Length: 69
Image (tube, rainbow, N blue to C red; front, side):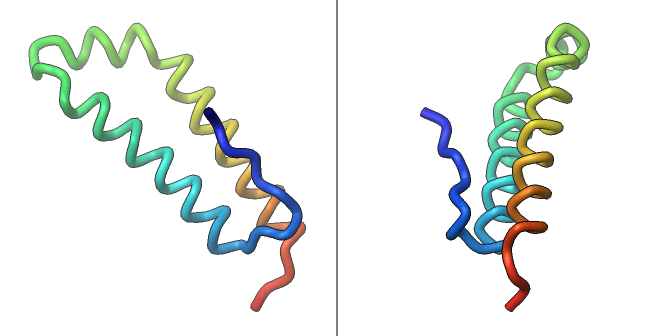
């Protein structure tokens, strides 16, 4: 289940969530056999970029809404 950022969370938590999701994607696709990776990345490119954009937008919103410490 996907965790949604709440207003009380910090900027660091937002950045960590974004980096964690990116790490999950990198691990998932890096674990593919090399001869399949290009085909799968090409097939999933829209989904991957959509996921990154969604998490980046959530992190940006949280960072903007959170006071700097």
